[in-house]
Image (cartoon, rainbow, N blue to C red):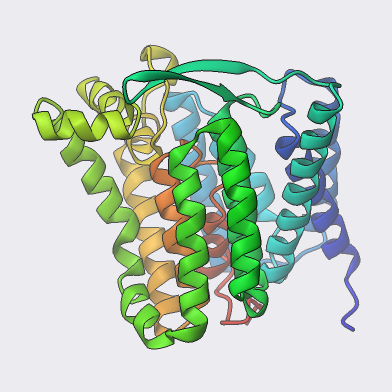
Length: 362
């Protein structure tokens, strides 16, 4: 058994606390959340000040800080700075330990929220929603929105399948699929519901048909750029009848992307307060709010990271990248490292000089 260092324990504790708080639905309006956030910051600071950085690592960190500050000044979004805090503490931390921490935090917060909701300690918000010619009643189960409840479960399933792929057998898939369907009967969140099924299929096939999965994962490095281009094309073609029908299937996501693109993009991003819509697509969000420069850098970082894992023939990680990238197509959490976990991989790959296939630092 490998002993954990003091710095590693500080970081893992900090990450668990903030991930659990976020998973439980707490935000900056909560005193408890703010206390957890500041304590976790102190823990990470105590870890970082005792580390030695290479000169090239220091320059990369400084460059990232400058870019994030520019984005904050123009885009007025603190999400990247929030994520940076939990990324800069990852030096010499095994990527699998990071993901296991997120799995435990998300899993426990998910179960806890369902329990307190079932006991009536917090109320569910019911949303009357018009779909396919009739009204349906959607419940948020205490998560704040039905989509968030279903996408949270999708994220838990994705982390579980990545970390415990040897346990993905037919029975496991059936049990997860049954709970996924039960959850869907409350949330009616289609995108995450079908994505969870797709996650199970891909990880199961990776065990029984590895050559087929390899052919698919060879294209993983292009997925995010392809989804970005697809977002723009669909938004620009919103007037076409076939695209409008597709927009109904995506519950207005294409329409909202079209509105955001009509407001234009800029080099360093624009504030969300200037546009009267809700974003449900990460790729239109980063184009508008993060700006062209940040979007290009994010796409390149993902491409470079996925390319390196392709060279290592790391199919498990590439499936993870593909599924998460698709999930980001229907959610607006690209800048949030607790949701967009590919940022952990990219940071360790490109800032801390890489990770190997098993997730251990070189």
